[in-house]
Image (tube, rainbow, N blue to C red; front, side):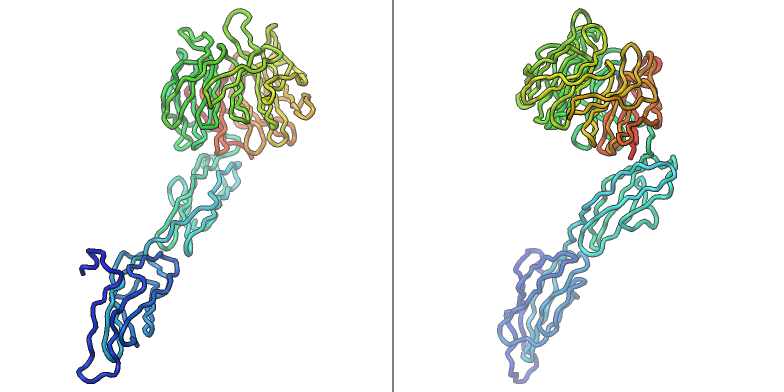
Length: 547
């Protein structure tokens, strides 16, 4: 028919003919057509009744050929087409015949039944952290047209019989660690959607993941906003590195990205609000010991670094803290490897202008200190190595509103190379380990409300230059570090509820001067560091976290 190839009229009247050869009292129907033609309907959705019209005599009966799409029907007395289509149907022509005692008329009704909108997952299945012998339950909430069906898969393979909205695993064994689960949600009209990946990890367990392209120690790492990827930059192997790479949790691999414009180690790496990363200072040069004033930003959309700044002066072993307004506070550090080189100065990086501006100085010059953003937007500076060649017990607080540092209570124990971690549940800061004439196992809690420190338990093992990572459940993972020049593989958890440290699984490699980065999944990525034989590591591990 020409109407299909040319996409012609809404309804085509084929004609009318008189029935029989005798005298009739009713005129035959004429100008027979439907209100909507072509008609496009959606599978699973009731249609607006399609009403015919005609001139001449009033039809008393209607029929259609071929049969309408499944779920649709025609009234034999009124010709109205109605119903709910139940199957996707390509464009087709249906000839409807209207008749009365005077004759017949035909109209071509063009109908297409399109797929329903694909189901939408409202609540994605969440990653689970469980102990050996426990079960894990994954659940999905979805909306869609008609009855939805579900099929759960483990590592890409469908699990027989698991077709409900939730799936509970058998008791977990070691082989189940790092397993990935998904669910496909489908409707009866052909629409389907696959959930995000939900990962199963064993509590307190480190598992090797992909290796970096280069061994690295004294490097830096920042989690990117998009996809929980991690940028790893610089560090030292045989020499100081300018290279950088990006870790992708799925599939757990590192991919080289553009190199920095300056090779550097002992630098800082800070995620900015625009998803770029500010890399500042550190040591570079031919021997790898020259303090740098340069800074650059990494753009994950292009995979390239661009020079910004520079800072007012060179610095390494400094801190960099992103402030609530998106600016970055850079404080302290060393300006060279010789002489009275310790810094009390600080400056602020403004990402809107890519420039650094001096701000108030600290009351004490220090390096290997900590800087922790408090819940009130201020920054707590603790300890560090002082100009007298000793660890410092002093602490101070930077106020972005005034641009000034103000002294606060001192720690009970002087220390440098320690960690300081904000506890989200209390707003306190946990200060752990470090060095002061010996390797420290002590810990203290800073209370911003009172400006004081209080002792809180002891580490299971003394640690210096370790990592500390706050976990989603409120605990803090303390891992690695060194004692007497020997790197550690052990790890422990601080529980803020009981204010105690408990042992957890050990890393597969002893390491310090490594990095630890919390991922969106609740896992912690540990990269590189110095190993037992004083060589840089290219290995990386994932810690599965703790409830």
